Amino acid sequence: MLNLRDLPQSALLTASFDHPAIRRSRRLVSAAEALAFVVPCYQPGGSPVLREWLRLLPDRAFARATVQLVGVGAVRGHAIGLEHIRTRMLVEQSAHDALPVCFLYDHWLDGGEALTPSAADHLTSSVNALSDALTPTPLATLA
Image (tube, rainbow, N blue to C red):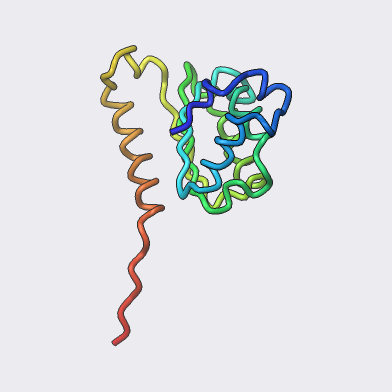
């Protein structure tokens, strides 16, 4: 697991490709079959940390990966930034597959471990979609 908030901000903002934490994150991405991002989306362009980190990835970084974005915001309009990031992942990073954005209202998260039924339903659907995308489709048997 990679928590982007734990990456040094100085390395992100100065595009320090050789920083050990940035190199490690790039290695993790290159080996991944699936990537799930849970991000706050209160700003129009999405999460600044995620945007800066994406800049540091090589072209086609997600070419082997299925990508799922989960965003948390106060109003549905906050999801617009996530759609922008999803498009960027598809186009610039050549994501193998970018699943539809899962948006959760922040009031669905009560601040503790429990989720409201609406949040649980949305997350379950997203997890199932990600799982389905990773499950190989059986080949039809020839008769």
